[in-house]
Image (cartoon, rainbow, N blue to C red; front, side, top):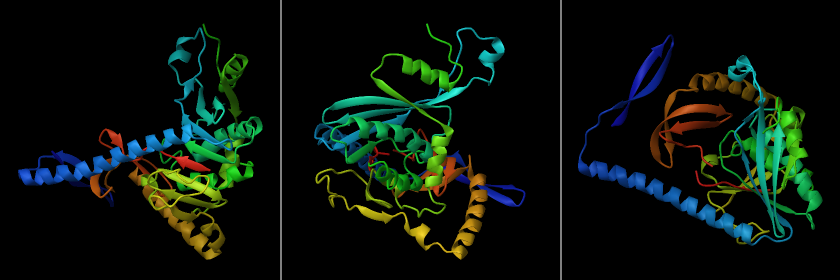
Length: 342
């Protein structure tokens, strides 16, 4: 079976849809396609083994001035009552709470954290709003205070792997000095958890906390090429990041040249953008936004690691497109920010 493109006209617009079709060929052609797929699988498998080995070695060799934060969003929690009327039980009025979990590793031990919010946002501003109270607590309670923070996460483009997140990574840490009970609202959920004895530290995150990080990102951030392939992003000075396809910590706290790291200045665009170019970009973004809305849910052909794939557009954030391909997502997913293999 293979995909066959099919043009569909809706008014003045023409869309390209893909349907399954039968394709015939020789055994030699099939073997050639198999070898191409095998190369891609081998690279993915190597990245996975390398990332796991490097992250494990980092945790086992932490110095006193280093900390590793392993972070991830949990699924949203639905608030509920012990006794509920049918309309509330099956209706859409049940409130949800966002929980972002953290595991902090230092040379002296480990500490678990969880931040809770009524905001259901999971974008890069929300990530840093949830991360900020954890960083404050780490700076307050670790002695000596850490000067290097390694953040490990998965890599969806809407949360951790995008240019706005890279910009915040290169700025915010430097500003930081581095039977149940009735739960109707996320606030009730937070109060309930903080009253219980637990090894997990909880923090409350408000909508205003998230908006602060919205305002921290300039209107224009230069694109970072190769975002979907990178597994390590490092910032040693404000406004600049270095990235590479796989991680390495052999020379820390210095940045080694293994695996050809690339430097990106994320402040270039905001400094050089003139009024004319801003107007031009605004017009371009308006057009792009309109075109992007037309792509949501559509099937498209994508080029990933030199191979063509048929995928469905899940959502579009800036210049990053999250696409679902077959049973796995092309969008995978280290201040350094370390990401597992995609």
